Length: 426
Image (cartoon, rainbow, N blue to C red; front, side, top):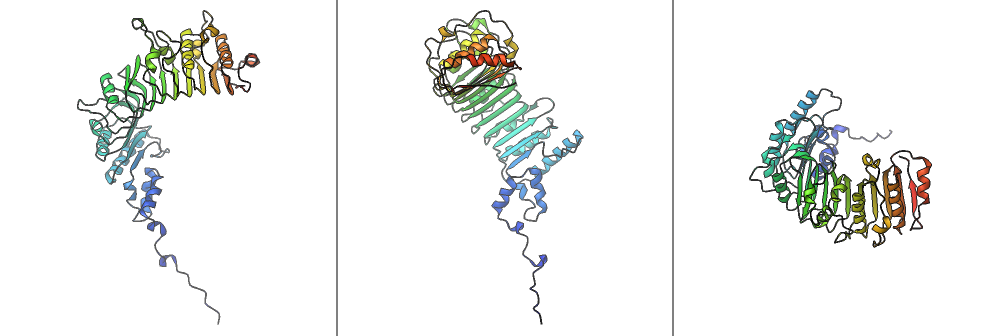
């Protein structure tokens, strides 16, 4: 008699599927890498997974949440509203992050209800981006949320109540396309004692930026404003600042030894990276431009400047920064093209202005947007003569200048033997 083949248990005789017996922390780890939409779908895997998604601490409702195949904006909007309601209704446990950002999202009143709900859950990160319609007025309950560590608002109107005492745990604040009164802005900034990162873009309601934040490390701003001052910002290391309107000098302020350049740097002793964008260099050049800053920027290693090389005041301000940055390693110069075609009235005497200046120690220099006018070539020649450790200078013209500009660059004398000039087509 032949041996009977061994019997293997059929699927119904085996132990339950392994996915149902995964440890809880493994399931949590899997769900943390999924969107809310995908996480909800896991509820069909088994009874153990059915409501596991409802404990997710990070709730993100963005453009990926509603199918892109749906074209009707009202259908998308209604589906989004119903889904957010459903998720918050079934959600249990803490909410660390709540993000609401969808291209079809309007400032609907439902947002007030959701904000109230997550604020009661001691939410830590709150992100609200309204992509359409008028600026949405933030519900007053948010100002009572002392658990917040990160707040990000887009196209919103902020009107804190008189009882607002600040966010005591907020380390990161990002406000873009917002409306906020002058006194409310100053109170908000000064009432966040542990704030480390501050971003302000395209704002209305205040024009004077009084930044008083002792723990601030990163500051990024772009908009229309009249004045800016720093106080108790001795830890600030990274600043990117752009003035989006051509600065007009108020002559009544230019008395005595007035200098925007001196005022700007007096409370910024530890800057490591500085980006001067749009018209902000014109603001810094207002008043008396010193030869050097009273206290050099010892820690500054990267500097980016958008400049009109036809403006002698702006050139003076830029040179002051270069003289005052002995450890600068990288320099980026971006020409403001809308003003480069103006005719300069007199030559700049580079030898006189740099007579007492120590050698610069930049290793990498990038000059972008030049059109080949004489002030630009003089500035490039000047940098090559005063950077003995320069390794690379990259030049990018605003349009195809042919070989003539390249020939002029190659003829420039260089203090550094290893310096190479890289000419890139626009």
